Length: 186
Image 1 (tube, one colour):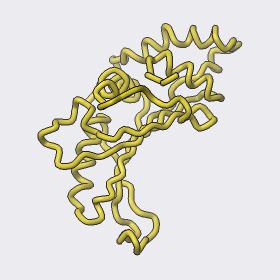
Image 2 (tube, rainbow, N blue to C red):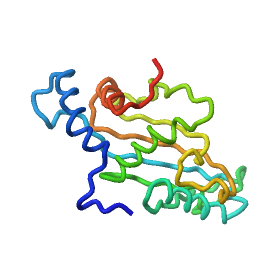
Image 3 (cartoon, one colour):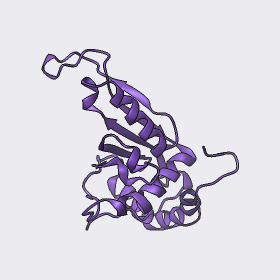
Image 4 (cartoon, rainbow, N blue to C red):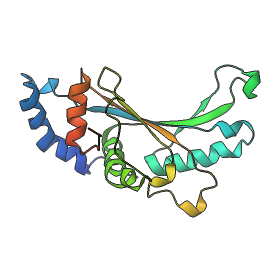
């Protein structure tokens, strides 16, 4: 686990020293508090197979713990759906919210290690912003992260990654993420 009292991630230092100045110059902010910053990163794994086999949720929880560096929360069904054989309260997935040093470490690993390992990767779509400066993306295989041992994985799951920022517009958020070398397509 990270010792967040003395350790400062490389990406956070880069943001503080370089990215803030570039964003302030590019958008003409009058106050440093107007400069967008990362708020949180939410990682979600939907495990639909957990309906038939309850051990799958434990496996997904262990894998997400390795990837995120913190214990995820098990998400449960809110309603019963007979067509999907889902009862209310049944575990269906796992999610984790990263903030602070773990957030910057995860983003650094995702951009520089995991995304280049994705098969047939041509960049991220730039139109996946929500209009308020938040970016959502999907990763089809969780095994692209180096923390996951491929030989010990019983099933490959996809995951959703939502990057929440304090930016007011998508242009500000995209400029910030581009400075972090996020590989957007043109």
